[in-house]
Amino acid sequence: MKRVRIGCNYVKQPFWKILLGVPLIYLPLFTTVPFMVVGVVLVKTHLRFVGGMEIKPYREFVPDWISHRYLNREQPVLNIPWYQPAHYHWFWVFNCKLYCPLSVALFRYMAYLVMIVENWWCPFGHNRKQDYADGAIDQSIWHVDPLETVKLHPADRDNPIWNGEGE
Image (tube, rainbow, N blue to C red; front, side, top):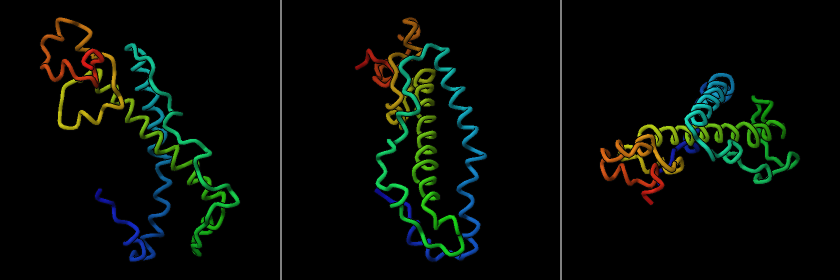
């Protein structure tokens, strides 16, 4: 697996870049996250209105609280002289137990919902379609009507990702 290189370059970064870069991680709390929450509500409502059932809830994408190794008093802290919040355990608990896992879960949940939408409305193969298996559905819109089903390419008609009968 090819890895993103970051740790080897961090120590080489000029101080001003790090100083400007650190607060950028919190801007999505105000810009992206609210829109994602609205998007999740809209997409999930759409899926329910077209008949979607047994859609996983958001909480299935959030790691268990107990899965983290550290309690507040044990949480490691970074000794960054110029950034005082980094010295406090509560800062790392907020980041490592709330902000990061809940944000990752939100984006993974939205991706899951969009996979379901894609499998419902567009059950046509492409080179990345196997990645949509997490959003597998029983039938697509094209499989509901037998007159339309016969028009589908066999690979699209019998694909188990969007046609439970194809399994």
